Length: 226
View (cartoon, rainbow, N blue to C red):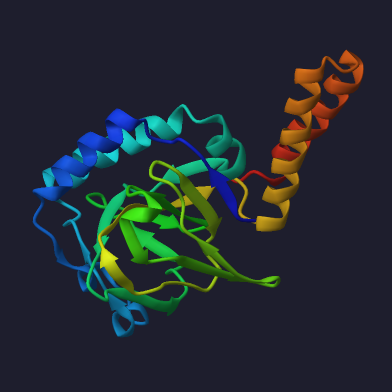
């Protein structure tokens, strides 16, 4: 399931982030690349332990905690601290799949990467190229969203970032360990939750809405891993 989540960040938040990132010191993206990524990763990113990365990441997490669509689609158990990258002048990230497990910064706890997320910080017209291409059984899906919008997709997916040929592509990226590990089960819950919300908005029969809500929570109870 690939989910587009609009307006995660406000215009003011975006403007402040871009201004601060314009003054940032970037490092080679290989600093956090795994074995397979090291062969195809050519970009720059903020150091994970940089004060700026922690500060901006806290803003992203605070916005996600209030975003109902993100909560419904991801059913997050834990979120890896958001990181930030930059692509310019032909920089790219070739086809790869994200590592299945990542060590959380600081304590060394392990996070299973069920979902990957990219939060776009620049408008599509600010740069050429730089599309995120996500592969699934239905083909390759190009993603290049407006600033402040986020794409959520299974971490099992092969994906890549095309070379940037003009301008700068700034983004935040991170991973989520979901309460529901299986993407198919998570998709069913998301579809059911979406349908319930639409029924609530139309004032449909209350008993029917209550029954469907019960089904949602009973399925979540069956599938959730805490």
